[in-house]
Image 1 (cartoon, rainbow, N blue to C red):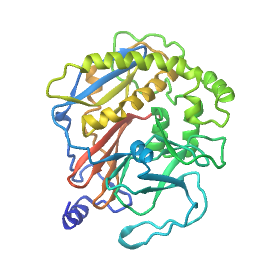
Image 2 (tube, rainbow, N blue to C red):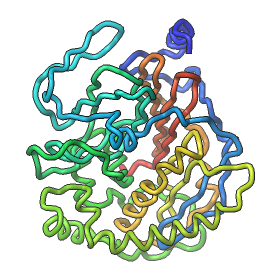
Image 3 (cartoon, helix red, strand yellow):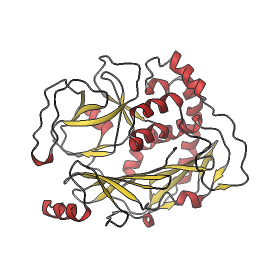
Length: 382
């Protein structure tokens, strides 16, 4: 995007570089992708987890974007603890200043040495350093950018000691933890969600159900199971070890395998369309959705996402109610409400919109053209 055009849009839309503004519902919006581009397939249900595939006949070329997993594996992207090297950045051109203040729980330093923009998703787990962390927010890092102060949340409460260099853990944390990082942005609530399994409350607003309500059976992985796994297999409260423990995987592996099998069968006959996302329900409640700008991006994240949804499912009551497709469709419409916006000129724009119990977070790439790379909608647990 031409810089003068970006400046004009900034003045019209009211967003600022690397800062937040709030905009009323009457402010202009430029959603580059509308709900009319998406279609829901028939739901895939197993136990208390229902997956609605979202397909589109149109899409964007996202091959130029580098993912965190690929960047760390090739060495084009590095992540370090803050203070491991002198990091002083110019204040010119709205750039941030990173002081060499020593390690910080909630901030790391990322360097993108590649020639491609780097895509980061909230909830992606990086393992190593003094403790494992998850990315706090969706964002895009420009190619060849200066060392970036990266906001993160700790998901290994019991360790603060030197470890191996940071690497991608090929994990996206489950929705209860992602919500605390992406929406509530609270370290203490991230820790609580890791140790509790699910933040779901029976008092949460349910979606539209089909059939009469049924009594909920206990979660397949109870809070006592999580506590026992923490004691025996994850004494540092490491998310990766805790939710990769035998107590948890014994329940999640079968669910992941069966949902994957049914998902592949449901989506294998598509003609002229690609799967670009999913809407997720637990029992009778539609709770979550992840939609991407292309089928390729969805394919890259799908295996990690389905495991995260399964972890959430086994930690929730095993209510066998089914949700309606009409309620799932509400997760495809654009919410209207008060917005928070963060932007870096010529790189990305992050937008959060809240409406009732729903939150919508959209990550837009600004160059070479304006597209929504990732769209998340969730029903807040509180």
